[in-house]
Length: 337
Ligand SMILES: C[S@@+](CC[C@H](N)C(=O)[O-])C[C@H]1O[C@@H](n2cnc3c(N)ncnc32)[C@H](O)[C@@H]1O
Image 1 (cartoon, rainbow, N blue to C red):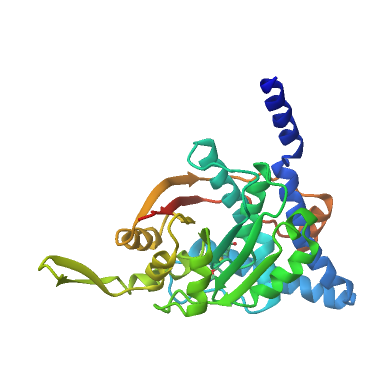
Image 2 (image 1 turned 120 degrees about the vertical axis):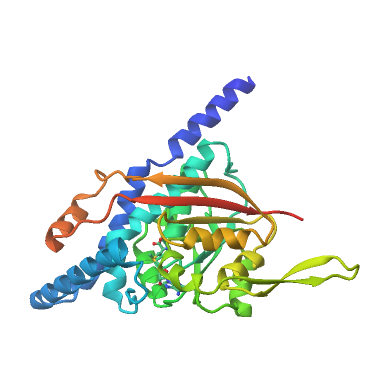
């Protein structure tokens, strides 16, 4: 009897578990709908101007992310809505898929376990931009049987606060299972280059059960490398030598503020100093590295695009990026001391 009940439950789960390519299609359609909503109020000449503007932004963003991150001076300015949308069109789904894929792989390897009826989590996305990190997490949770609220509170710490406008626009077009499942996203201004976090930023990190750093450390890693953690040794009360940190950078502050039991999901390019920055920091704090892999050429299914999306790709004469190059995926868990 027990066995039948188990089987029934499994079958129910199977029927509600989404097909990943259909989910990706619907999420990408929401990005497309943002553009179509802009177009609606424009004359045909303005539409042409919009197309040219976005095409230029997409070409420029792709160039920087593919080739120029190692140069300190070349950075994308996300303050205008069209550059932000262009990033979303070209890169966002690739990152949603990467986050989903990494977490799914960790479950497959029995490193993580999802409890579908568990309480929704608080998430803090460092450099979370348009919300790729939380949508990837949402897709992952749905695939593993979560059907109600996917997250509780979500805080984004990002240099560009205007991402908040892009998220609000996208949120209107998201399938209900995401817009209702991820109800609350708050944006806070934050710059990796400032060593010390403000009380507001600290609060966001302290409250989170999951902190994400998805492709946000690499754009600033070269700068952070110039701010090593300075340590010195002092004598403790009983004459023993104690290591104290006299100067640190923001990554150290973030990891230090995380609560015991919280997870950090880090995904970034294999090349560049960012891994070292993270790992040097971990050395000083009590973290367990539970997953540390290199993912080569993870490709998201490209057959999923809807006909509306394909029409827009043709109109813009540009395609979203579907391969992810070589990335490091690290999952850390703060130890309960
Ligand atoms: C490549 S995007 C990644 C966004 C998102 N995590 C994703 O995977 O799609 C890099 C993000 O880092 C943010 N960023 C760039 N420099 C930053 C800095 N100095 N401090 C904080 N965030 C920064 C950008 O605004 C952007 O949201």
